[in-house]
Amino acid sequence: MIRSRKARLSAGIVLGVATLVAPLAVFSGPVSSALSGVAGFFALSDSVNPTTDTIAGTYSSPQMQIEVAVAPRDAAGLTNLLDELYTKGSPQYHKWLTAGQFDARFAPVPAAQAAVASYLAGSGLKVLPSSSPFLVRATGSSVLVSNAFRTTLSTFAPDPVAPA
Image (cartoon, rainbow, N blue to C red; front, side, top):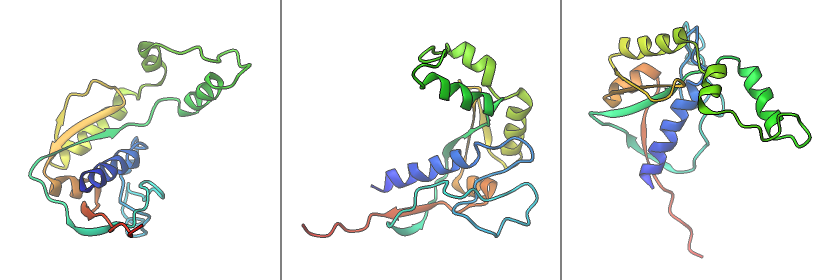
């Protein structure tokens, strides 16, 4: 159960930085006004599903891997295409793009990918190759990840289940 909470936090970080283009914006955990005055940062509301589990302590790891999702090029066009792909009667209904076609139309511009990689490297994380143009992968300690995203990583203990 603790592992799934870590995954939820990781998903929140990825979702939180999905809007990373310029200025640089990163996930700061649940909505907080603490970062509103910090240049380039803003809190994303509802990034992570709330939990009733108890925080059991700070998560600490000498090595962890993260993936940052970079915002797609032409996000409005992507939303429109998705609507058309799933709307019966649309001329694009179920006319799927190949991976190459999708990437050619919607992959982030190289400058956006480079900006994310540069930020992560500047935060002390080691940037690794990724097979997706939408993801920038990096590794580092939990301390470096926490500092880069200006957030706290926590370990959760599941709430006891009430007897039936």
